[in-house]
Length: 129
Image 1 (cartoon, helix red, strand yellow):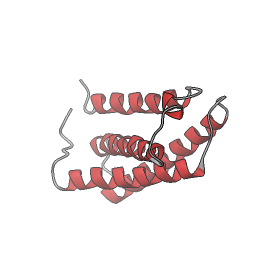
Image 2 (image 1 turned 90 degrees about the vertical axis):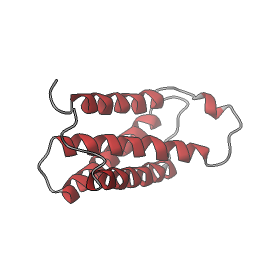
Image 3 (image 1 turned 30 degrees about the horizontal axis):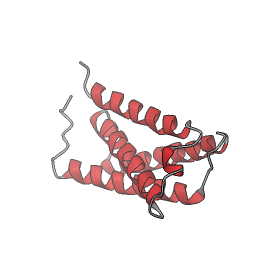
């Protein structure tokens, strides 16, 4: 199997999950009593995972400088988050929110930093499949 194929498949599946969840007109959490701000935590985690997966795919398949890879990850993931918020705005029963986007961006920056740290400490290796 070509180098990094599993990671690319995981990244693609995660993006499908993000947009799939955004396609649901009313999520069950909308009807349950949840602590204030819990949805922001969900956004944070969702986009942290996206950034980690995307960073790992680029690290495995690029000879770019690590700082450039991190910048590309942040920019593209923010674009995905923005598109997701726009997409949600056209789904009946869903809302687009700038505070959700802020939580997404915080998750993206955190996830990118964590993945970059894992790579620099040798925990993430480029020779993995």
